[in-house]
Amino acid sequence: MTKVSLARGALGSLAFALSTGVPGIHSAAIEDGELVVRTSRDRLLALMGLLRDDPRYACEQLMDLCGVDYPARAERFDVVYNLLSVTHNHRIRVIVTTDETNPVASVHHLWPCATWWERECYDMYGVLFSGQPDLRRILTDYGFEGHPLRKDFPLTGYVEMRYDEDRRQVVYEPVKLTQDFRNFDFESPWEGILTLPGDEKAHESRQGLKLPR
Image (cartoon, rainbow, N blue to C red; front, top):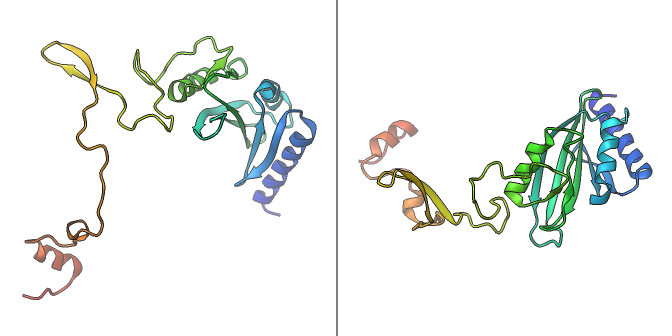
């Protein structure tokens, strides 16, 4: 039996133990070779404490925390926690869902590094974290409006920032872009052309061809 099959068997045992022995678990299964656990917001803290402290799981590290936006859902956000057990050399992914108004319990008291990740998730998606004493934006500027990684956030944003030499200060102005998107027309001869006029000799040497004179 290979190391891969042994690892998958161990993760399968953990998935079975979680799905049958821990309340509030919606699902615990192996997805693409990784253990993915979905739970409810009200059971998140109990589950995370178990995954950190129980020697079967021993997830000493929170590697990162991120958001995913599904605007068509009532609870549009997934909050994803990627945990690592150094002791057992396995990873467990925990997922909860929420919306713009219902907060997710902070896990900063379990893994202090969570403060940075929760601030980023709040900044980029607007997800609220209850019990987080330092829930400030971390990547955008002071006074920034909106949350850039939401699917309904405009690609160009709302304002642009630049340094004004005359006023000697940073100024904010409405975005004025003449071309929002670059549309490629692959049926146009100018899009698909291989050799530009006047470049025939270079094309010939590149391709090792003899072009007609």
